[in-house]
Length: 222
Image 1 (tube, rainbow, N blue to C red):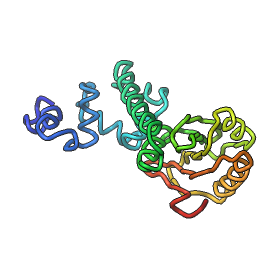
Image 2 (image 1 turned 120 degrees about the vertical axis):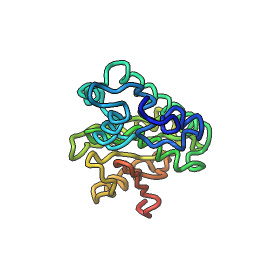
Image 3 (image 1 turned 60 degrees about the vertical axis):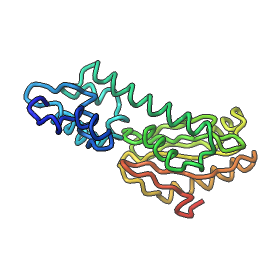
Image 4 (image 1 turned 90 degrees about the horizontal axis):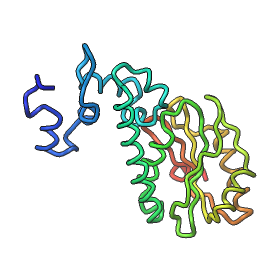
């Protein structure tokens, strides 16, 4: 980056114009700091974004996938993991302190960090208290690329154990397309009925893809 004019170098650009002025590759380059032989840090950053489908996919990537990237050694992987954990903890704190529907975009951002980019399907539940604040986020079931087996009895047991008053369902589509299927709609109704038996209300069901989160409530599917 020393070959770039001073006002185009990511660090100087950030200090002069703020982080919002930087492109994703420039922000990532600041974190990586150095490139590899034959590929500068900006080129390495862009390669990572292209390879993993943007920042969200990169931060959600499995450790084994990151280990295979030339130039992404233990130190850089640790820094990426630290950034992801900071983001998760920040969003978790926000969801724990205020009703989730006071900040619906925060819920979507949180689920993107948790589920987007996973190579297998994951079904998770956000368990909420009587004021709709986050009690716990739990990944309850994992499946193949095609489907996850979800057992309503297990979801009910966890809701009782946490003394939850409401729940938000969520799962990812490894294909990256966040479009609800008929099976997703049927599962939602099954879980809604099961949880209603213990007075736990299902507030929404989110389907997480790459760069998109679809809400059942916003689609009128609940």
